[in-house]
Structures are given as C-alpha cells and as structure tokens.
Length: 151
Image (cartoon, rainbow, N blue to C red; front, top):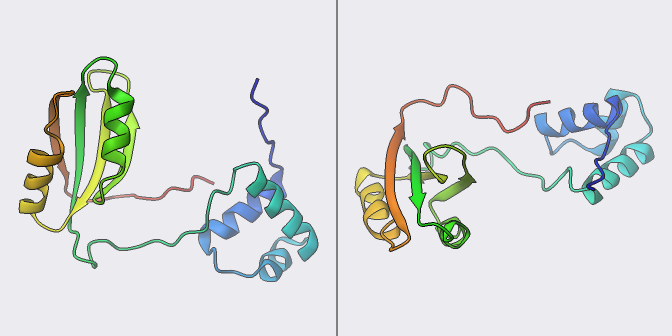
C-alpha cells in the first residue's frame, strides 16, 4: 500500500509561495507565512524527499522563443506496444507531454513547433511506425489557462 504524504496548511502555504516565485528565499517565505526559517527548510526537505517537490522551474513563453504552434496529437497504438511507443516519443525534442488515456485513443502527445512545415515533418517522420495505427492532430489556437499548480 502506498503511504500518502499528508501536507498541513503550512506545507500548502509553502508550496503556494514557491509556485508563485520559486526564486524567493526561504527566509522571505518563512517570514511571510509566520514560521521559523529552519522549520521551513525542514518542511521543504521533507516534501522534496517525499517526491512532492520534484524540481524548481521557471515559466517560459515559447511563442516569444519562436514556437507559435502547439499541437495535441491523439495516437492509437498496436496492442502491447504502447509503452515502447510512448518511451520513444517522449525522447523527441519538440514533445513536452505524453499521456496514457482511456477512451478511443491510447495516448496524447503535446508538442511545440516553429512552423507548419516542422509539424508536418514530425507527423510524417516521427509518427510513422508499424506500431502506430492512427493519429489525429489538433492545433491549439489559444491557451486560455496553462498552469500546472492547482493550489
């Protein structure tokens, strides 16, 4: 049985502060939420050890970096080959998400591209495999919300 970490309100406050700005100092966060810096560091290390905090990252505007196209690609895979196909696709540079699904499709790929030509080449070269039965590609027109924290 998997033992779940049970965060209390102070842990949630720490996570919220880190999600808002992961560059804040421990001292600044501790002062804001009303705990000692040493207590915050201990809680942070516990959450990191438990795998709740996986990494410290930053938010990038990929459109400003020249990647204006985001594609959501549904994929149907031959029986028994899903993990093999997913692992191969997950290593591709334009891909930033690979998910198992329930329903008609077996997986979803999220990827970013500089041009339609790049997207076309990706579909026609990387998604051509004896194990990929069918794909359905959709372009994302507008990201209304794209946040990964729900706290």
